[in-house]
Picture 1: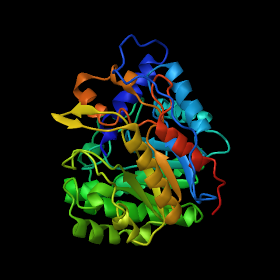
Picture 2: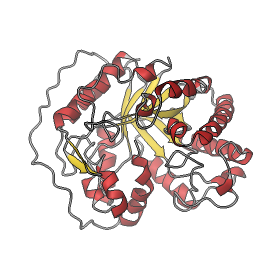
Picture 3: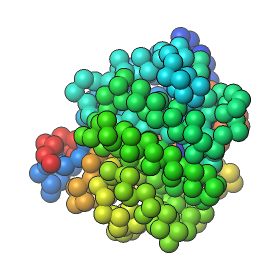
Picture 4: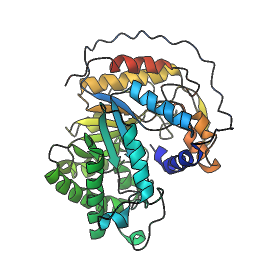
Length: 386
């Protein structure tokens, strides 16, 4: 999904508004109703970790605290999603990284529970998945300085810089899993020439990192929608192209959302049993690096989307049952808490896009637990057993 296209703007709002209070009103939601906390499962254990990215419900200190508490309470895994650029010049010469980046890294690392399994995802692709990622300096998503603004993904300096950057990420965060590309297969659709260059860069970085960190699972993430022939993707082409990367993937990371503009009705309902079949066919271990389904109706870009808490709960059950059956490594939900308060602070040109994911949290912004949270929590309480 394209939620990351406004990620940098949200992070900017967090940094500028975290010390103040929001005065904007939230998008209306239904009255809070009691949800059943009794969920009966056939499974006696789970072979996968469960967690969230650090996406806040609002751009205030209170919102960040709520996010931290939620991630700590309802997961045994934290997913860090660095999609806002790369410090290209500094990484090339292995120089000290910009203060803005290091401050962000520092506050993020300090908030990760010590007992959590850690996934870190980085990418050399920009947010459109069509060219070289932006520059991360004092803030993220800055314009690329010259000559980087003219480099392809397989340029020699890009290879060296990205490898150095990936090393710095590993040495700083000590992740349990490392994704070195985010939704990389979208590039195959949006910019085939960049996809070809990405494959060369990925191979170079994977081989070098693997020699240094042989026990660290290194991979890239892919969208199940494009892989399935949706959103402009061709299923046969996606299959053959991803197969060329398999020797350089310890596993597959998946962005998995059962809804969106690519579906005529706005969602898949019922969710087909073979939803994950295109990814399972590769025979690699799978981790769900981001996922979600809305719980309430919304409208965006002239299309009405109809959802309910029951649909969201069914998605959670479907995801967890597949994770058990297919021995997924982990399942990550992109956001734990609805961010309707955050939407009110967004620039108008991204507010409508952001609406598409606003109700994918398992808890409402007013603190009301959704039905899906009781289902999620039931799986979380199962003992972890590989």
